[in-house]
Amino acid sequence: MTDSQEPIESLVSGDLPSDSRQARQIARRQMIAEAVMAEGTMRIEDLTERFGISLMTAHRDLDELASRGLLRKSRGVVSAAPTRVVEASGVYRDTRQAAEKASIAALAARIIEPGQAVFFDDSTTVARMVPHLADKVPLTAITNSVGLVNELVEIRDLTLLGLGGQYHNWCNAFMGPATIAEIRRLRADLVFLSMSAIIDGMVFHQSPDMLETKRAMFNSAARRVLLADHTKFERRALYAMEPLERFDIIIVDDGTPPSLIERMKKQGIEVRVAKVELAGGQKVSG
Image 1 (cartoon, rainbow, N blue to C red):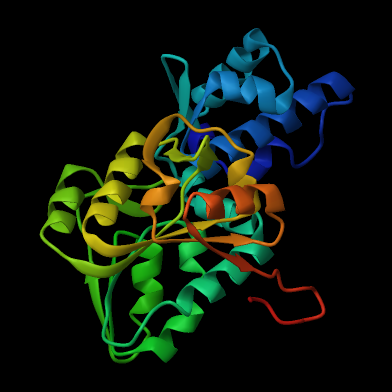
Image 2 (cartoon, helix red, strand yellow):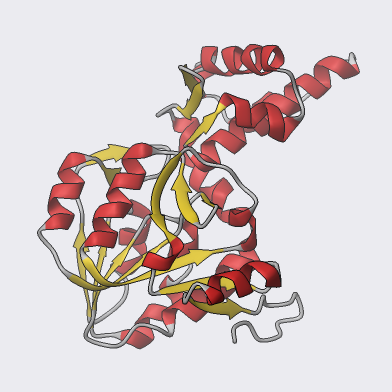
């Protein structure tokens, strides 16, 4: 197995160097790689803030990760490279805020009515809706996510439309001009989307290609639903898509600051709050 193909765990597994500084450096590089894989694309400046390191240190770390084929650097931005390592990025993203995502998805599924045509984006939050969709059939599901296609194909009485285009390993999904052209030929009743960040009342994403694919779904649906766990209000991302008030419904979890929820409601936005399921199995959404 080549360096570019070795699992990311190998960056920190095994016998760490006895020098604690080097051990910390290896661990930090793993966290940087995982962060970029989770978002797809990040500004190097954002990495310095997140990990409390200098720009010079960030560039050294990124150069090392790029040399292993894990990441790519370009003009102040770093992106996940299409290697076998990146295939794990969806798994990594899915572990973050797992309880919040599950609760939000359960509440989101209540919006669907049998007989509708629905766009589902490739986000890990939207993917959590799958267990609830068998109760909504007959249903037409439209998605660019390969992982979602593989799960939805098991649901009886569900019509599945898979969107083609250019396949991207890091998110296990199709996106780009060909995908967008397919989306624009369709008109759905609903779209469920999740984004990287919410900043100053706007939704943002780190990948311009993914953002434009999501935007096409947004523009081709009669009703738009945004799924956003509370951490989305704490993050930064580069590319803006739409203001929050253009969504018909925004679903957040109960970890979202009440002041933010109240602010959105004052803007006339319909906000629904999902109660996060506790470890003991207490009920989820409200």
